[in-house]
Structures are given as structure tokens and as C-alpha cells.
Length: 277
Image (cartoon, rainbow, N blue to C red; front, side, top):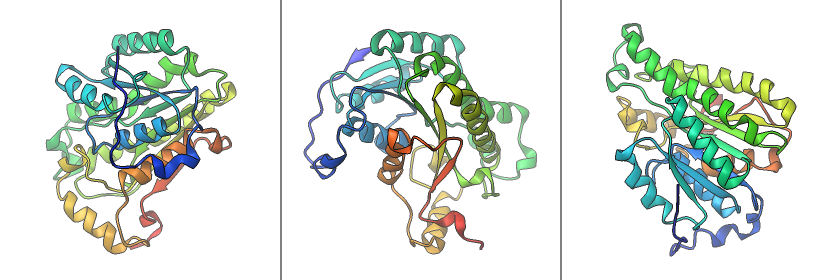
């Protein structure tokens, strides 16, 4: 792990939220999935830091390391950065052992990780390959179980909160979303079962179903621009949502302000999910 430099903000973004500072003071938030500034996980990271949390970030491999470390330079110097491929049980174990040693415990855990082969995100779902199906399920759904199990001892008795990111394609057919929609359905079911498992120890588990946002992974979905336009045309708010709006909802769900909420999927999609046609 390394210590990143203190942030230097020149956009005044933090000053608008002074009234919310301190909600996560003295707490640790472990956030998986930061890849670049467009990442939803990055918006969540910024919200957590603003609210006073000490943040821990991961990177999957050497190719991703430089980008994550560069982003970490914008965060407080107690930010921790360490390697962790969520599909590698040994790496996950080492990662959380290091987090436990450095931070003592975990108060918030964010799973913003998903992957499917590009060739599986188009055409007919019935043509999905077994390899493509298993990969999407492992990275996008089972990894939440892996992380929750490894983090469980570090969260116990801390009224901790686990948060996953999902999408409407988990419950409706979204053109070209295919195998990822099925993986997200498994992810949402996992949220409910994990909430039941971890609840007796005080840990809550929820998910945010975010509207489509121009992230690196989303741009791999065929016809994504058409999806954005359709949402903006039909959603009650007549627009798409932003990373920051998802980050604000995440900050709520990861804090004590949502202490009575668990096992839920919260929609942040400008209201699109309520529309029939």
C-alpha cells in the first residue's frame, strides 16, 4: 500500500457540502472499481472523503495501477492503495489482511465492479458462450460474495454498510445488455441473501440501480448512446443522472443516516424505472 498526497481542489466542489462533512469521520471506506474520473466508484470515493472517511482503493493489475495511483494523489494522504483482483481469492485475502492491519476495521464496502466480454454484449442472449457467461457471473456477481466474506470479520460490530452497483437490465430486457443483465440479477439476489447473513452482526447490504452513465464499461454496450437518449426522453425528470447524484445516494446508504435500510435496491435513474412504456 502507499500513502497518497493531500488533495488540492480548485473547483470549490467541497465548499458546497460543508454541512455534510463529518458524517464518516474516523471511519474507513473500502471502494472497489475506481478506474478513472468517469467511474461511479470515483464519485462515491469523493463523497466518502468529503464526509470524513479514510479511503482504501484497489487496482486489478499493473496496467490499472498507474491510473488509480494518479487519482489517489487528489485524495488525503491517509488514502491507501493496494492490488486486488476480485476474482483471485488469495489476493482478496492479502488485501483485507493489509486493510485490517492498517485501518483496524471497515465501516463501508463498495462493490462497483462488472465485466463481460464485448462479443457477449450484442446479438442474442441465447448465443451467449459458457465461458462468457461464467466470466460475467464471476466478476460481476460472485465477487460481491467473495469481498463480503473476506471483509466480514473487519465489519462485525461496527454497524457497517456494504453497497453494490446494479442496473435496470437486471429485471428488464435491455437491448444488447444480455449476459450482463443476468449477472446483475444474480448480484441483486446476492444483496438480499447477504443482508440476511450479515444483518445479525449489524452489517447492512444494499444496492443502487443507477441510470445509464457514460462510464468506460458502459461505452462497451452496443447502442449505448441510443439508451441515453431514450432515458432522457421518457424519464419523469426528462434527463439522465450524473455520477455525483449516484455518489450522494451512496454516501447516504453507507452512513448511519440509512441505519434502518438493508437488502434493498435503490433506484437513482431520474425515475425511469416507474414508467410502463
